[in-house]
Image 1: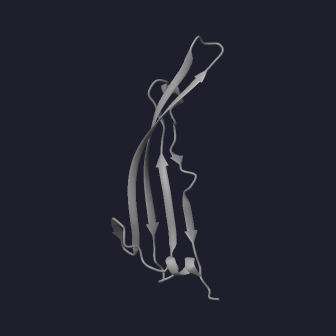
Image 2 (image 1 turned 60 degrees about the horizontal axis):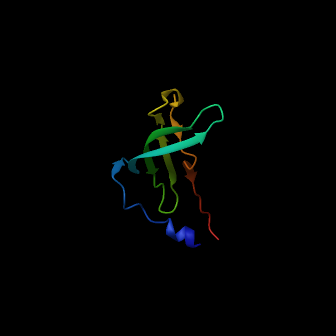
Image 3 (image 1 turned 180 degrees about the horizontal axis):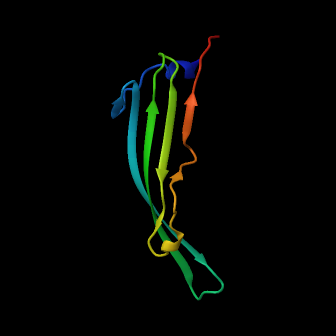
Length: 106
């Protein structure tokens, strides 16, 4: 019941409205330095890559309590030292969501 009450309000923190759909967009850039020691090389091997991402959250209020919701992050990885490891396609974040909650009563 608590979840039912908490999701019953329309979103107030959105930055774009397309018709009845409220959406929020964001972007981020992350980087990672990976090192490994390979026996066939004298020293450790380092890889540094940058991962830019864009995200969008969309909510379409069908009724006051029922609304489909989508949240997706798309991005790619660009290796600065070893470009042969670059991603050739878009990466979808594993926590992407497409949901529709339906409440039917007690």
